[in-house]
Length: 284
Ligand SMILES: NC(=O)c1ccc[n+]([C@@H]2O[C@H](COP(=O)([O-])OP(=O)(O)OC[C@H]3O[C@@H](n4cnc5c(N)ncnc54)[C@H](OP(=O)(O)O)[C@@H]3O)[C@@H](O)[C@H]2O)c1
Image (cartoon, rainbow, N blue to C red; front, top):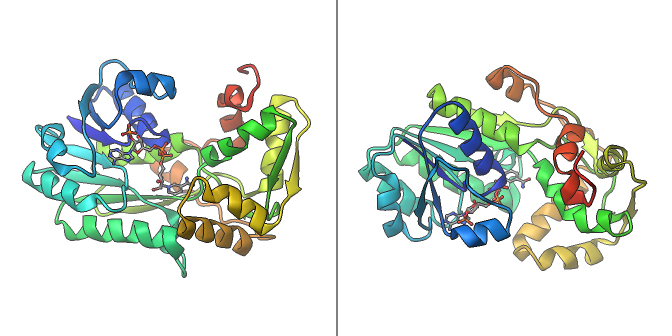
């Protein structure tokens, strides 16, 4: 039995589907009930054992971990110790942790520091571990969906800031190979297959949807104000600093996804095509 945390999320959801495809028995721990999941479009596939639980309430994890051999761990920053204690008691054989490429930055910033703390706790737990360290997710750009569906102008800052965004299906594919092949003691740094600026990405979305779109620059203050409605101040500052630092650069593209999975990583256009409905277009 494999336990998936974060199984209603972008990466964990794909981990579940790929484990089921591989014929594995999967259990998911979630804070949400079926009706809430359905209303958020985050259903859990049939055949998965669903256990109510919360990583912040370790007493809820005992049942979830009973009879489990390996686990995919979503990094709830302040809640890893309780999970690790329960996992040790359950004699877990492998923790595959969703981490972040930010842990490798020379200045990790708030985001990198939070993930580093989780990685260190997992490494110190004595449990066999694997770290999956992705760069920016393609799904981050779903934050543009409302603007794309309503007027086609995406407002932001540092339009020429570049990253090599990755499809969560590829992050999941690497995590699943790590679980199935018991790739223990490895840290996989993952990027998507292309360096793309924000302006490039808006154009690709427009091409795939067949709709003219453009990127419009805001001030750092205007943009920061919007982000503060969704994220803690430290995370907003960290994100703004990353955008500033990558403005006018070309992002490194790594071969890790293909090396681990044996197939190329999904392109940005391929990802957009799967999410056309979210961007307000008829499914392609
Ligand atoms: N976005 C990026 O560019 C980026 C880059 C590198 C790394 N990352 C890492 O990836 C994460 C996002 O992954 P994602 O997009 O797959 O997530 P997501 O779609 O935002 O979903 C969050 C998941 O976490 C679960 N969760 C949150 N708090 C929980 C708790 N207290 N107990 C149990 N489950 C909890 C939720 O489960 P329920 O609601 O069902 O309980 C849900 O399944 C980030 O937080 C970061 O650590 C992100």
